[in-house]
Image (cartoon, rainbow, N blue to C red):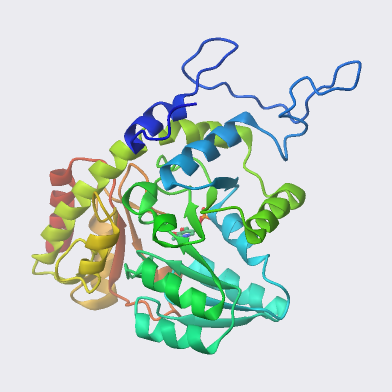
Length: 380
Ligand SMILES: Cc1ncc(COP(=O)(O)O)c(C=O)c1O
């Protein structure tokens, strides 16, 4: 393994310095074995490995790389982002209490609401980008967890992580930050006081739209972290070796991809903001965005690859624009090398999402090609 003072680009490109000892390969091997042998004296041949649910080299390597990128004490990989979120919430006792940001990824909100109902957990939903509102909720409730997502999907609201930490402390809660849209490169929530940072690795960390995965990284080993690790090990929500191997391979280009995506996204956001057929653009990189100053402090190296924009003319006009796009794939998800567009109202019509909102995830294509495609689609 490498020195700890290396920059993210070096850690990622060299997969934390791994070399396959058996072959000398600069690429880690893929070991799919579910079980590992003992010798005639019943000693493990390799003391690190007993059974795949708990032990796999590619999973451990992925976790090591992510710990180093996040500045974390430890990381656990999960088979999806939702499995990672569920692992955190399963630590809350029946009858407990949690504070969750409103208007975040709808899948997260829906699962948390159902889970809290089933387990008799008090759920306080609050717009955490409004620190006054968050302070008020935290001051009046004792909670085990405060869960925020910044920038949020698909509203692109930004949450002040330092301030959220202070709020969490008043409530006696651990702060968990879903940093999927900020990537491990643009924001390091653990350094701002978060107890745990979460990512859907399905998005930019893998970045090639071919692996489902989730990440939890912790600032320090705590009873909460031990409970999460025990739950993953015993309940078995583990990432498979092939997925972990692909993830490690993908992470080698993570810093390059993020840099290019941010650069493209900024150009696209500026183009959309000046387009006569666009009502509004939600992107923290634009000075007009309510969270721009905070994002400039909290994110370094760019403002991410995710944005939403409102098309003049309502729902039909937005759907028509989506339908005319040639390069942007009409598909859910985000963070891949290819740009995607989604009409969120079709997916979550009951959440207050504007009917004319299109969410786009910007990939690594040529920015001018993306802009020309958007322009022809907007002009009709
Ligand atoms: C911000 C955010 N968090 C969590 C998730 C859930 O991740 P997964 O789809 O990997 O379970 C998503 C999925 O879109 C997301 O956008």
